Length: 596
Image 1 (cartoon, one colour):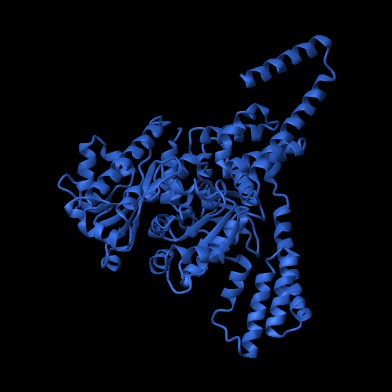
Image 2: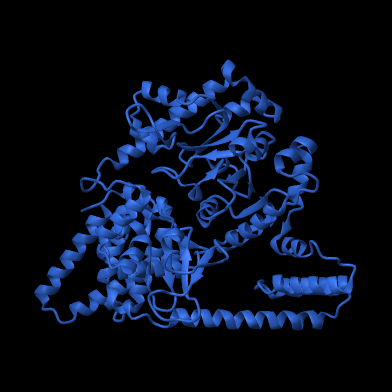
């Protein structure tokens, strides 16, 4: 039974991994991830890690890994289909009647069209008499009619089914409108006994979300002034077959042309619109409050530096610290802009003008300076115990810095500013670094302890270690950088892979990426065993983020062809002249076909 990809993705979205695993494991949050004692082997120190952002888990002790389906299979001793059925029942999803759904791409195209028509509808409503209050809101925020039109801003009327009726009149099916998340349903039944449904966005200022290809993929609706507390400030499109908020960025469709030097990352949609109007057309915003690695990688395709200007409150400070770490993990340099007397960039530009905001950008501070600044908040630096507390926190910050020159510079500054011997600060810093080094070594040692399943998943890895490592690198990079797939696959086919498992995995990844879908572990389940899915989970978990993904990819592809050539040379040593000539003819024909 071949399950449609859109069904599997919906299954994942409705069963977040934490809720699936929590009945079996006591999970504790550790940064962005969750950890607990592995249910598949005996341990006293937690080595079972859950990654909520991509819906996977991996145990660094025994090597078990996978997604919600593989976990359910193992925990409940079920086969693949029964595990899917159990998760579908839990989520209230109906299992597909047939096999492969060849209508998947058509559904996506229909959703794009429905979203585009919805955006036109919202904009027309804004310009109608019913939209006057919303238009006054936009104008009151300092936006011009030209800017409003440029961003396609709109208004969702205060009506239960006005958009739905409009889309139905335009020929869109109920299923397409629902799949686009343009309507919602309740437990209340209508006269026909069906769940009552209504327009998802009502009486809201509407911001279309447009991807890098110029397609409307979703919406963000802001409550009208005075209704924030009653209805919630923002309602956003949920994940759909064409939209996942963690993979997209508001304003990137315009900003991508202006961010060669740097991009300005802000928190709110209105900040982006306001800054673009003020001339800062390289401004973008994360969709939602939590910036993700996927969004960072998307930015890395267009810029080398990010200027982070998040809201000037406690939540903004926490978000800034997390954002800086994510940007660093994908190789992007970043600086931070502090807003001295305003809560957000929109307010600052409206109050002080574009010139002063430009000056703020010029004075952006480094990540280290910002974290040292945050470390001092709430501490009485005039008191001896306050200074001691701050210096200890400052050493914790500097312990994460790998550049010895930068560390020495800041240690010198701290010594001079607070009248403490440089040697004393350096000694304290050294102790912290050494403690963290031991913790890191212990963690890495746990990861190195060879899980028994590895050789059974890819037994040829022992024989072709260099080739297998390069194959894994190629697959891992393409999973995290799908924009590199097309150029890679034009030269590297699955038949070029030396090990059987990686050849099969590369073919599956290619099948997923070639039709424009995002790779997800849940899409492997029918074709790969739980142990094999766990192996892929381990590949993803240990991947460090690829600071220069294109170079690493080229190098890995080169290694594969080198190893393949060595293997072919060895295989021809014992051939007769006739066999050798036939083999050379076959290779020449193969190369010719690749170049056609």
